Length: 207
Image (cartoon, rainbow, N blue to C red; front, side, top):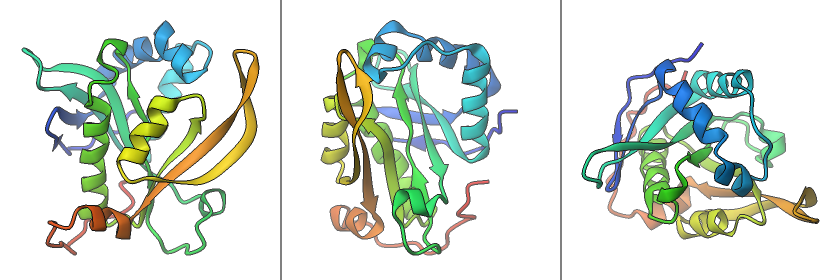
């Protein structure tokens, strides 16, 4: 079952609204778009697979639809999740008291790639993660090394590469690495010095 939260976040180019069960059909189309599949290096997904993924995301974090709001009419173009993650060993985090999130993101309409919507959505979610939810670290995991657009995006937002598994995926006749990126709380606030501080955080688990 899809858990629907009540958080709405506003960026400069995007509005992030709660993902609802009515969005599953749209998400299914995005996840099977030929250009999306090619960019992600993945096979087609069944309906049940897509539902399972979005049920997991919605029940373990804050799942949003990304709407582009700088168009003549607002348009849903993708999804993003602030996903709670306590797999400290896999992420290489020693302090198990840290609050950790990941930000799986998909711009499902290729015509809007490279126009700043993904960057704006991630910036907006990072603000929510660090300034409201009290995150200690936010990760972007399992980025394929052939995805130069994604790597440039996360680098531009202050993420640092923290893990690289060499030659883990075979794609178009050669092997590529799988890369994890992370931005820490300290670095986020260093890059966003104007924030005055708010320690009245809600439940950090996002449940």
